[in-house]
Image 1 (cartoon, one colour):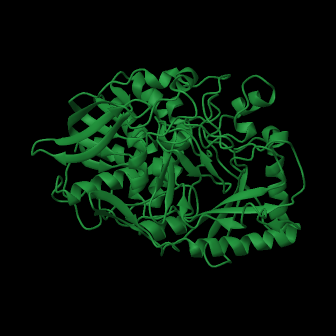
Image 2 (cartoon, helix red, strand yellow):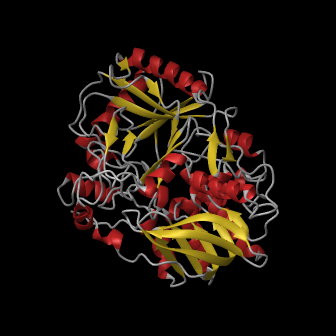
Image 3 (cartoon, one colour):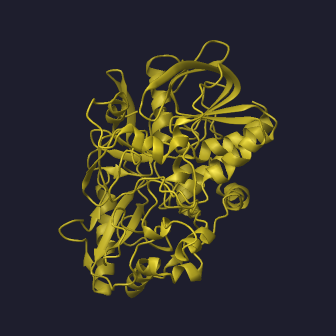
Length: 524
């Protein structure tokens, strides 16, 4: 955990803007069912995002008892309640035990310290946005799930993970499980997606052909928002802090729901794993149960026969690097902590586009890809978080295939920290800046939104942290940690800093499906 995040959990003693009763009334469900996990479980999964949820389901379907621990809380769904905070005026529900955060639009927001749904983990030269909730990243991402091109995938994995196998079996399996599909034309024509249509017009003027994007969004719910059959959420610029009406077909509606339905899997919310080790017979995990105000409800040590790390690149890397430094796991190799990257994330903006529509819907409609500006780059149609109205600002989320810039986690003064070059994303930003200038010139728009937002930004920020326990280096070819039978990595820590100029979630999920199938077949 980053130093700032750790300090946030401890609290600052400052007065709350809203009383505790405000949060208890808004989301009473967060305060119920907080039970310490058992002292022993055959299979323990740390984290409930894509890798953890998939591991839990497949283990349970194989008839095995599995316990999932998640530091964040289980957020309810309701078609009409205002359950989540928003980017425009966030309160404590927005971020995980912080009192302020620099928002994507460039402003700094201040709010109460509370167990919110999104964590901003701050290092000296990098800020990472990641989930802190049951369902992990599926609750807070923009729903985009894209398969990388084989050329980029093979360059990253060097043939150690066969692309053909994922393409034939595991990518399609995930698509079916999560009901992935591109935005339908009737949704695309809604007023909320006028910015998507304008985005397509602008990139087309520059000679690109926009390609539809597969998404996790439930289009029936998005349609219901447009006809007043549920509270507007996805259609009014909400996504980063959750969609309470179920607009995103998140893991709580898919893998986790199915895992718990077997009766063999149980999710323990509010429990953060602080350290991992081995007692000579079993793996042991020490952790703490907290309530949404950060108060301790007790500590517990869990023993397990098999341990599956799925706490995300930051969480999993933190546990492994700490275990290596403190010698609670004796045989971790030199690759633990290495190979970390930002997936080449860049925020790209143009302004003074043609006005179309009133609000900005959050689902992405389309993408373009270019290799002519230094590094292979994908730009995706996006919205402006924190600016729900359509003001003629047309953003993109850029992902640049950068194989060179990588960071490493190290242990110093009792904490795990990230060593990352403060200019490590400069090449990615430069590529996107040149690409954006071409589009702006052709579409007669203006790069950036002066004086608020630059043409490109994100030098020291990412929402797609990857690496730290790279597959076939720190682990074997199926995520088994080298030197430690029965210990597995099942999340984005496996991926060497990039998924090839696309969002990581589909590849993380496909790898998890592949790896857990191997574990079950091998019986190890």
